[in-house]
Image 1 (cartoon, rainbow, N blue to C red):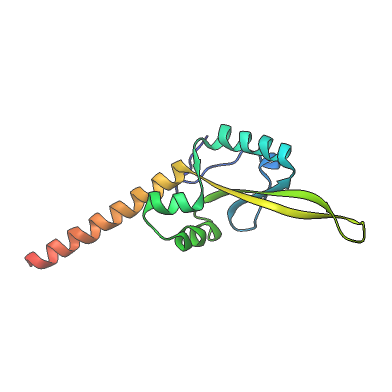
Image 2 (image 1 turned 60 degrees about the horizontal axis):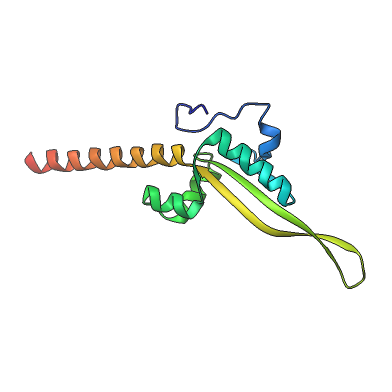
Length: 136
């Protein structure tokens, strides 16, 4: 795993197809398939990115709202690995249909740590400025 300048993962080209297609302008990788494909995808994500957390757990870890996590994901500030589990079902007419059975989203913990550190440093700067202003 290689963490870049802004705390984001760099995805190597051979691994990218397994992780899924990336949404343009973001770090969101989307894949879909059945349960066996999900297990292969999950193993690859964990092997490459290390420990990962859900968006809700990321919000708690960083001490921000879930909306802030999704906003940062969509802005390209967090790498997210999403997998849609697709199942087959039969309609009343007998035609086979595909349907989404579930969705998994994981964010690398290393990126959450970098974001939390960034926010802690920002809070320390603000506090230092307030202290300096009150002394003046």
